[in-house]
Image (cartoon, rainbow, N blue to C red; front, side):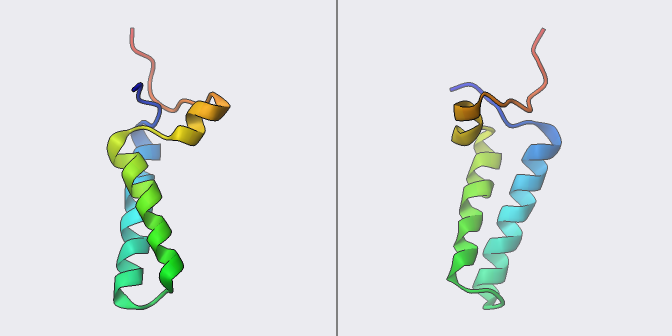
Length: 63
């Protein structure tokens, strides 16, 4: 599996995922907050299936 999520994109995904899950656990937002698992997992694994489908890559190029 090639990495296609890098740098700032990765950090934002992890933060957004954690915030959505935390808000769900605190009861601030409804069940839909569990969607935060998706950006959290894609940020942790540095791989986004949607990016693969559309040919996008935010990782710096290896030389």
